[in-house]
Image (cartoon, rainbow, N blue to C red; front, side, top):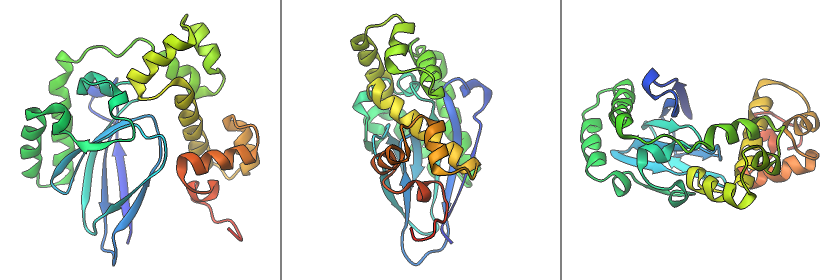
Amino acid sequence: MTATYRERPPVAGLAPAVACVWTQHVGTTSAPYEHRVVPDACVDVLWRDGRLELAGPDTGPVLTPLSPQSSIVGIRFRPGHARRFLGVPVSELTDARLSLDDVLGDDARDLADRLADARTADDGERLLEAAMLERVPTAPDADDVVEPLVAMLATGRSSVHDAARTLAFSERQLHRRCVAAFGYGPKTLDRVLRFQRFLRAARATDASFARLAAASGYSDEAHLAHECRALGGTRPSELAGRVVPGS
């Protein structure tokens, strides 16, 4: 066995800020299972091995060894929304893996105590949701650049320059706001969203990689392969879960 992964929508009170709540379980293996995490512009809070961790927005692949017969429970913030709940600029979390109590202090330690008593993964999910719901009344609104910028870049129909013009920002102003909200500038955000657009399409269809490259916004298949190496650490076929003869 390797690992199973499932996610579900959050409770309604968290839906504007949270993409999903998720659980990963590793089966019986003879060696640690190595899980590949690729950039998605999100921030996750996760409970594993008796520890609450914070996974910041990544700019490249992260290979994480997971112990046999272990479970991880997590909550994933939508791009640009983690700062509301964590109280720090997301630029301080970029490419970071750290203890949640480094950011939330006693609140994180109290939550860890409750999670330690959870009997099931479902119980752990509900405790994470409840902890974030408690923060909603005091959470500030997201930067008003977040939703329109993600909406424009996610489709691939707007460049960063076009987005800045539409939002009435200079590119320097947009970069500053973007770094605080997403952890990196709009050009990196655009790359990550385009990469995720490719992954969704590649896993949903059997179109050729040349067609997927064009549809996802890459200049050609070589450009796609380069970005898959940079952001995913491997070939497009492996990221898409396809068997390619000779690969």
